[in-house]
Length: 339
Image (tube, rainbow, N blue to C red; front, side):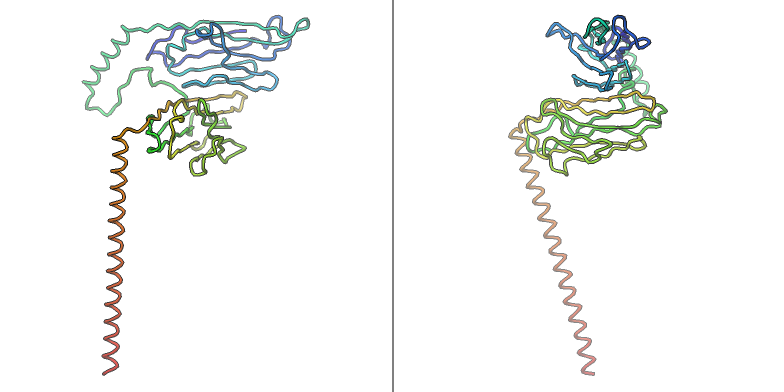
């Protein structure tokens, strides 16, 4: 049983990703004849113990994920688990442990463990130097159209994208839209991959919407009307796939963490799970907010009234023109009759 962690020391801004791998060499572990599961755990300072993040049943090839991550990718194969945390933060610097559970000819439920610790070391001096260099570069390149960023901060992240119309929404008076998308790619790694499943869920209310290969019509556990959920899933990643939910009247309890996820299968058997997170804050509207809403409604009503009056005038003008045309035609016919 081998646990591999890269890197073992993370720093803000400079560490773009943290990768933890659990693997079994030659599909064998000492004292275990039949391997039942492989799991990855992380130490929790509050409970002073390890808690399971991921668990893979080696017989059913079913992966259980017990924790929702901010920006992460989970990969797994037979007797292999990999967790990639993008742009790790200080709370990700903990001890990680791989477990293999199984039976042997003498005893059942035998467990083998291997662990490694990830340290957090903020490199303040290097960060200040980097910011200084960026400020100098910005002054030199201020007329350039190039975007200057901190190296590593926007490096490789999950292919999944999760955005909201706004992360701060006023209760009842502002709509909220969240969109989870998996863009098409020409990357050779994804040529033979199949997008199986996408979902959006809330940390307390659970699954909001899903879309899958077998169920192209999105479903919801919150009885949302059909026009509030949209989605398209293209299996071979030739086009962008997405899942979108819109609320017209959000409530305070809609605040919290939202997660979107996508499950991808590869031709050689590897499976990846991508996950992204948003934090939405629903706030009570202030008096100024309500005054603004009333003002906007009055303006819209006034504009609609003006458009209606213009339409009515146009209709009356057309009606009067038609009457004049009819009168002229009647005069012509009358003159012809007299002549």
